[in-house]
Length: 524
Image (cartoon, rainbow, N blue to C red):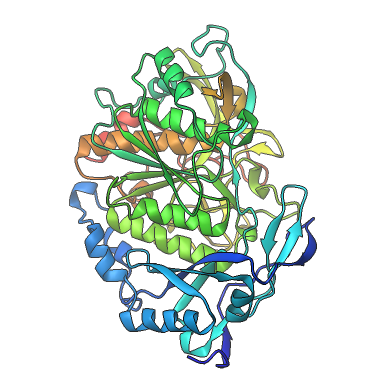
């Protein structure tokens, strides 16, 4: 393949400048760069594998694919993969790794070679939140590869997401009587009537982290105080990411919150934490590795990181969504936080925004409430909204059309049709938050970050009891399970532009779980 071939743009690859970033010069020509290319599946024109499980059917009535079957369906066409590798060689790039299950190939080489291969000018940028390598404009490829290369990730390594947690206060002992307004995960399990007699045995919960780390001593101390055995936690590094604890106000707060909530609710489940850099490439590769992990085989994935749809390229959202479709086909449930910055999701343009990846139609979007309890009973539960940047995310996607399973819900007045989030909710207000341990200290932490592992732990219990994974839950929630009294319907409050209402709403979805009832309705 000639480097002088006619070129075409990769659809959806346009990058815009990061607000507040200053160009600091071209990336040195010899600097080493590594990227992930996502390729067209060999059966791209066929019905998506996920369509097999999108109908309103109980888990026992579904037929999930095995990872081997999915690999056969969506691995790249050998001839097309060979053309991509020839393209790489023609520009002095090395195709170091190809993964049929993810339909991807890794390229390594020097910055100058990537500039030429994809028609970009990589620049270094300085930003108050951290420096990065970036680009603007579209990517291009030789016309012979049009449609084959569907996404290029890693040329731009700007921070892509933020963790959705908020620290409320230091705490005394985890079980102290003066912490009446906050909860341990075990207390929330009772309030939300999680099914008893289950512990997650035989299940694996995957947790995606884009920074920070955990300390085994903290986990041992935390679970000892809860009266539980320390969980089995395994760290998996992706794209150079690793378990790297630092401080409680950094990403450690996210990592420990996720692990402690999920593991307290499903104490016998295996917890596998996939650490990756906070870039679109790192995030996508971590999710893909978790979905296709044939060694650990997680049945549920918890994601507490995200960003407004406007901060993503459409090629990225498209490739993430394909990964989530693969998860649905395999029977893997993906839970994602809906965001902590209200209906604008932290964007200061006067418009409403939803958080991705929670806005993917194949993800269970998890919103937030403010919970008050009287013993093990709910005294009140309202939409979490303490301030502009301390409120549950939620709203209507401008990137994803309304999925078929949401055809019967009523969208907010004036909203254009689109995927509505969240789907479900749980306690998230930092003032009524979760008692956790981070870097040797006890804290009360909130945010929709906590709701994703809350639901992940609950689904692990469901999977243990049902013997068949719950998998893609959304069609059931909006179909045969709707209106059956399986949720605590939150009807008071707002997240900015949207107000709570009876039934589904764009603040808390269907509401918080009544766990035992939901399990029974699923066939438990």
